[in-house]
Amino acid sequence: MADDPFGEAFRDHLDGKRPVLTIERDDGYTDEHDFDDYFAGFDQFPQCEKEALSLAKGRVLDIGLGAGRVSLHLQSLGMDVTGIDISDLALETSRRRGVRKAVKMSACELDLPRGSIDTAVAFGNNFGVCGTPEGVLGMMVRLREVVADGGTFLAESIDPTTTDRPAHLEYHRRNRERGRYPGQVRIRERYEGTVGGWWDLLMVTPDEMKGLAERSGWRVRKVITEPDSGTIYVGVMVKD
Image (cartoon, rainbow, N blue to C red):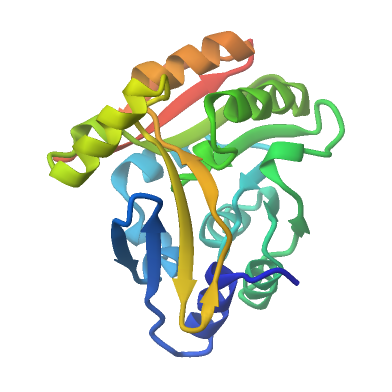
């Protein structure tokens, strides 16, 4: 199995440890990450996620299952939920926590029957997990085939333009000079002795999300922002 810092931290948190993951960006910027949010109950979810999840119905696809917080909540409401992740340890952790359908699958290579899903959910930064505008666009095109007519895609992102940190603003400037979206970052994770490989993650503004939606055949019905914070939001997209 490839090095999996996130998965190891999920497993250790479930086993009672207090893991702290280091996220390293390709310009040398680092940030530390604890895991409480990944194991949060519904009452601890951001308000924008709570409001968005009230729109979930039917057969649900949880993109980026992680430790299973979204799947477990929707399961508790009686929904048929399939969670996907590429991390074997994340899948193991979510199953131990009670997720019934945890499948190893990349969001960038969705292999599900046409029309088999009514609601897709991509919370956290999982909307941008395919890394580039082209990668995310490809995911959305395929997802539109997988989601039934009248279905919904609940997509969460961080608006990168809300930051005032000089290191982030400089990174955004360099991205623009290279013709990239400001919020396209190249990162890797470190946890104890494990170092993951470099990968791209795309964070988008609401307008950039709307642009990708239009290009892939989705319609953004509304954008739900987090109260008192312009940083995170959920785009509610529908397949007409």
